[in-house]
Length: 228
View 1: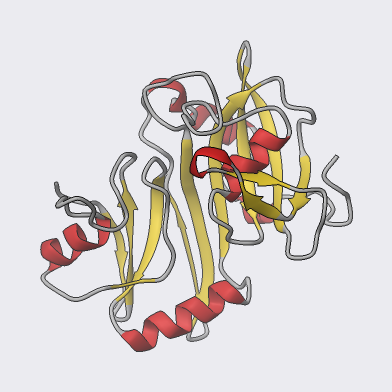
View 2: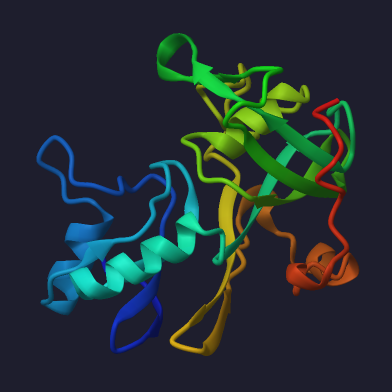
């Protein structure tokens, strides 16, 4: 498998992870990082990760030093991330904030709590995709495991194809890492990559109509609102 590299810097690179590819090697099968190392013939250091079922942009460091710098940017919320998802139109609200602590649930999943001691925080917008479905633009402000999947489940609209949080089957999990935006050594970088236009992700016209091509310029829902 040849992975698509969006941009290569002296210290790091941005590449596309296909849906269905493990991030780490597992059960004898090479994961995203191992495949990329083999493709480029260099050692790489993961900075963040995506679930196996999620596609899209990933930032990978070329040294321990750059990994440390980039990881610190993530921990300080100085790297903006935006995702696209397809969800049922049954969601309790069409845009807003989902905020709450997360705890381990059943079958390896997580659930959202009403407390906010160390909350997962997600802002989102949505627009009509087709009858019964909405396209969702998500901005996570924290980096919890399954955060976006749990957020949408908590408002009654689990992401289409999410076998862990939804009873409805689909050909893939419709969740995609769309934009990464950050400053590195005083230089601004921004990368945007739409998902492959297959199935329900034939969405370029909606991205243009909703002005989602530059999501960092949108006026996002207030962080002071509670989950409901």
